[in-house]
Length: 124
Image (cartoon, rainbow, N blue to C red):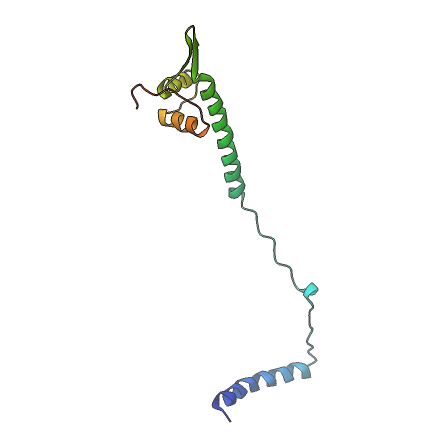
């Protein structure tokens, strides 16, 4: 006989003896079906995911509102026609309206929403 088989039988013998003693004392084995098993506990929802999702939405809404403000203040009508403002002029106009943006932020929002601004002036 192979040594591994012999070793397996040596380890199995105490288990068989314990099973026999269990049945002799009146023990029974109950087989549970799939419907009788315990359900997995419900995990707790992480509110951080929801907060991040709403923060992104709020940021996008705020950004589109700023884009509308930039679009409204990007041009000036004079007696000679419509003149476009530079990003610095738009930034200064928005600051008078209470929106504190930097010149690069004005340029980025204008580029994202395809708002044409005049070039020129001292940049930064």
